[in-house]
Image 1 (tube, rainbow, N blue to C red):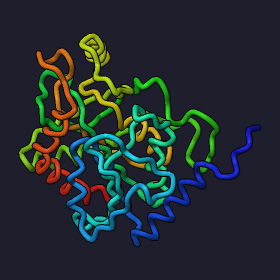
Image 2 (image 1 turned 90 degrees about the vertical axis):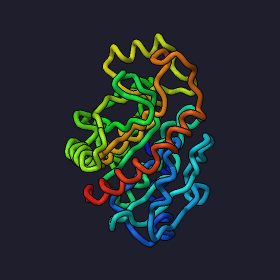
Image 3 (image 1 turned 90 degrees about the horizontal axis):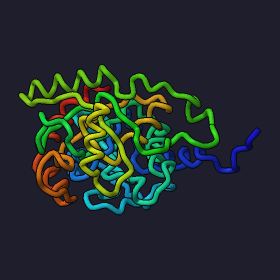
Image 4 (image 1 turned 60 degrees about the vertical axis):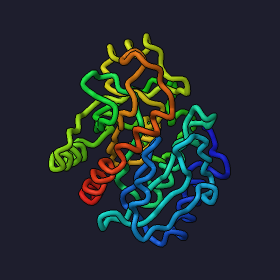
Length: 279
């Protein structure tokens, strides 16, 4: 039988959670991960304690524009929250264990609900740049899984059920709050590839045949680990660009950031309404 190393993943995550708890002075029950161009929502947090990732043991460093690299702990709408202002990506050269380590820390901090957000390319012709979608399900096309390797039962079950990765009740809350804002919020299927190159038109045609509505380079590993650790997950994609071949123009990361800025206030208002209801 394989022996776990002296300092296991669980122990490292537990240590990091203790550091965050001591700095923040509170135990949030809801956490958010903010994707490219969406990091401004961290400015909405009241009574905020901002902790740079460099000061949290085991956290990597974001290297992509639009990912500030700090955890902001405080209150939104009366609810205690932890907001990750920026994430790490597989394409940056990090392992999936490193990419998903913050989710494990958040769970051991006491978080029960995780809101994952991302910037995504639109595949569905009924979407437009700036559309927001709530993720109903995903396709893991990254060719790997964050749960590979030795199993530690303290982190959850070996074979977690993925029937309902994204909580149906949470989706209904999000759609209901969007309706109250007179905002169209569609459900969609998110496909995750490794990146960092954008997809080819042929790959986009394949993804459409598989049923994907949006495509990106994140979120899915975090959602898988969150479900293993028993967190309820809500996911949002901001359609910051239409995918290759959908429109007759090239794709660039500047466009992703610009579109995120454009929908900033609408997205923030939706999150302000939704977060208190998750508790």
